[in-house]
Image 1 (tube, rainbow, N blue to C red):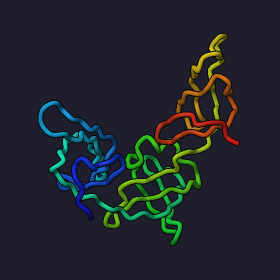
Image 2: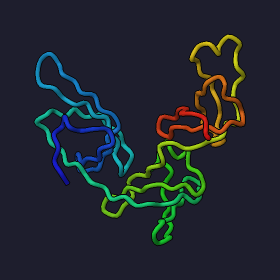
Image 3: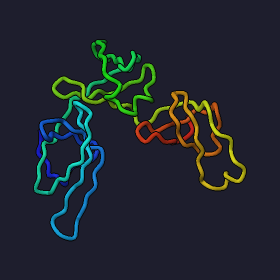
Length: 188
């Protein structure tokens, strides 16, 4: 593990703080008129799911944790649990759906994912950044709306609601950003 300054923390970093392992979600660098600069850090505990906001000054140091990664394949859901298979030895592991957060909505049978492990325990599951999905329901285009860059709501085959351009109709395959839950483009 490496020590880093509080102002060098970036989104996606895994740090050891308050006897736990935390994943940094958002940061905001603030330089007040008086006093030293600080980093406002929003992070989530990877063990129990708690969220917190902490201020780190440049004099503060934290341990940056290096997680081991392993390739797995998503198999199926079993109630509130998700079953994954190790691609090396074909062993199966069952994890709670909460570990993935909102990204779990985008899991597809057979999807390759990366499990992040800390001391042999799974702490997070990373899906591909973009996936293809089918639009099953899209609102009709309102006349006169096509000239502006307005978006309309659409529902994907996995039940997720995203905003799409007016020319996208029901039955179209699109590319979606899993973590932003946003339209990227039409699928090839």
